[in-house]
Image: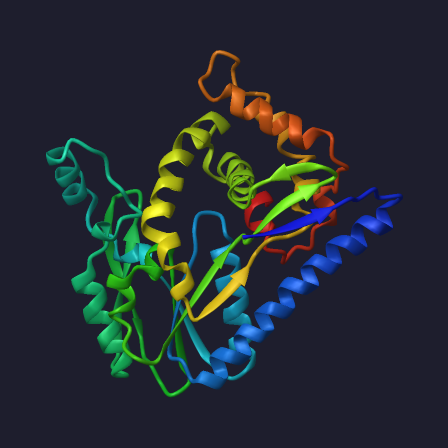
Length: 302
């Protein structure tokens, strides 16, 4: 990790917009560099991974757009579609006196993934599964017909696991995205993982109906899985992308404190919620309206 230190006092909205534009431009420039590297290398498969709330979904969409502009025919494949049936995972979890760990490689049907990846690599028409998370099983298939211009982006937390990358042959690039900067902003310190937690708090509340105390409860197991199953392989990735946005603490100062203060005082996670809200509430606010529609941060704030 590296440390970004900011001492910012914005005198007007114009300075705020310029700061946002500067951060966005830096990220877009990095994505352009990544696309050039992928095209020059002739990769047919891209394994895109990263820990929770790194911005994988937006990055996959932006890479798809850029590669298409360079003549590629891009197919975006979520590894989540290769989950094993929930009933089977439930039975295994019960036998082990635990709960389903969807971040584990054991949750993936590696045999099916191996078969379909081999078919794609061979250039054969391939039926890719469509997983219904409401029903907890595959409910259909989508046919793809690879050609000389086809590039397949396999996106998901598990895309960095050695058991998964081993299935992609030789013509693949592994791309790892995460927040790589700790942040000291006007003397207030945030670890990189905390910045991702802030992203997840607002995303889960807005798009998944999750109360902040529930997200804080889940975060311990999320972080534990990252430490054992994701971070050890990060340095092995062919390409790394830093999704840190230097303005995001200023953005979160306007959307997170009120949300966190809704956590009941008698809840076990109130001290953490209160402490986070206190750190954020004293920072200058960059309003949501100043964030571009195509920004990676829109994945979390809407």
